[in-house]
Image (cartoon, rainbow, N blue to C red; front, side, top):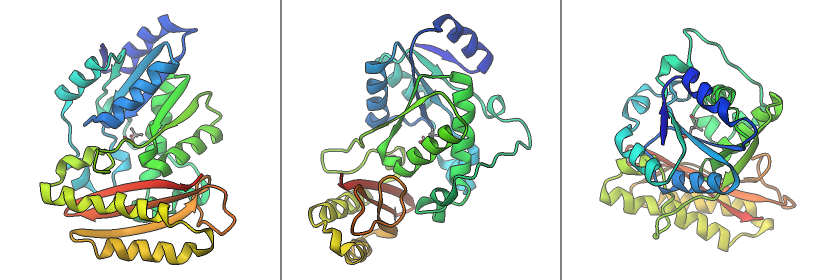
Length: 277
Ligand code: PAF
């Protein structure tokens, strides 16, 4: 695997591959099988696969969270090498951002719903860094995980508004055998907290099994109460939303996704499930 830390060196290397399809998997590292599934999917559809590892400061609204974000770079490089990823881009912050850089893109309501309510400015930071990375890598396709469902829609919207020639691809959530959605943050969970965290996927499954389009409000309320009553779980939201817009689902919404966020101990987890396709 080739490793680049500067945009200049990466661009120089990529210039030899013009005419080839390039699959891009942006990450913040602490790679798990969910990321590796994105790499595998990208390898199926592209001539060259590039992964980036960059803990993006502009998408954190809590400096402690940024500080504590895991950065096991040697492990990550070993995993990518084993997965036969072609290229890793691993820049420093100053390689990506100039001082006092300003970014704002109006994507309407989508930015402020769900995660947006609890993490103001988070999606502006995500769009800013993905825009910059796409400008450097210029891939054919960008691969993002369904676990960050809202992030996928935000990035898709940004790509459309900025007229970027890249195809966004959403890949399914990867789960452990007991249902826990894979996340870089899971390494912060103690064994007891990891057990408590199973309440998220169990509640999502319960809603999927019991989904009834005529009963959306009470299902939502019941699911939130289930989470509140689960030991060690402090839910922030549980919502049934339109899978295209993330606006609240109605009785006639065609695609419905259930999305949730909760704190388990000091760790904030998100998860979601399509309940009506
Ligand atoms: O999902 C992530 O890991 C990040 O939000 C992303 C897309 C790499 C942007 O920093």
